[in-house]
Length: 97
Length: 326
Image 1 (cartoon, rainbow over the protein chains, first blue to last red):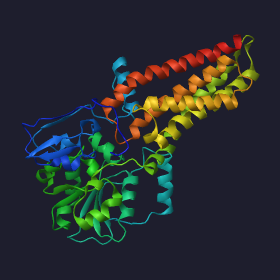
Image 2: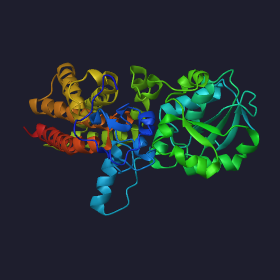
Image 3: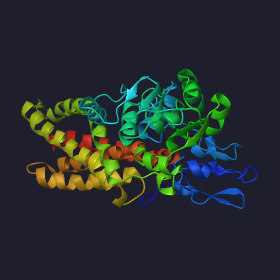
Image 4: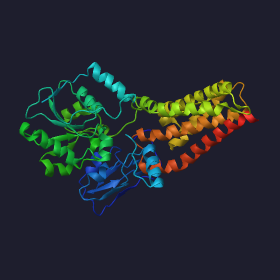
């Protein structure tokens, strides 16, 4: 994504090359275009561009991809509410979006 | 079956303004189901979207002159991408709407065009098994639908998410309007705190100093919720709380220079800290509106940003309360 970079070495995105069958689904759905296909295997070219949307993992037919499974959007309200919920030992009420 | 117009009425436009400004954010939805655009027949493509009315309006207005089917799935009035993340825009939900609408009896083909940004919720490979239709991901933006339909495929540009100035600007009103309740409460509190004096409570001071604080809030909102989104790619630092802090301190300096006459040193420092901290917080909250910040990243920067924001706010209030006594 031109003009934007977020924190390096933070997003959780892992690709198990052993499992990958090279179907190319991840290449198609990734909104940040960070996969390529080499010799019948997907490869992560720019893991730091990942925003953990989870589209690749959702559409991988062989579970070769792992993305931070903590669902919910990357928004501060959501995180504050989930931290508060943990402290107060209550159910988080999400973020309202 | 309902046919949707490809031109928005004045009511649609008023509705768009209302949701974009946060007046009715969580109840702007359409009845899920199958709709017509133009005069579709058995060979017409089937597009899928969520039942947030803003999504449907955006799609239909891009498709003037086209004849196709629009399958609106139940995302509880939430936009496509967030609904995918929350799991409401899923293969199961799409399959349910396909079956419920009797789509198989209306079209000869077995293909659905899904928004690319629903891929975080829809496992396209499951659709065939669930409802007999093949799911294909179309472009990210509705604007690219006509070109996609012509070519039959999306290019790299259509598949890449963007965050242009106009895309950022349109998010600003809702960020601000969601603040007004907090702001009203804060202002009330500020008037009370500002009146505390060696003579116990001074109404004149409450009004004068309370107004200054309210104006400081306006400066913080301008820096954190307006200038930060607009200037986002050009601001220093990657972490949003730092971007906001930089702009906030700058706005604070300008504020105390312009509005600081007659104020004590402690008060000037309090205002500077308050504007810096609040702007930092507001900028950090804007991460939720961007299409490139990861949840892990936001959590990481919040562990640094929140202590700064809470610290500056507490110190600012302390200085503000102490000032009349020196």
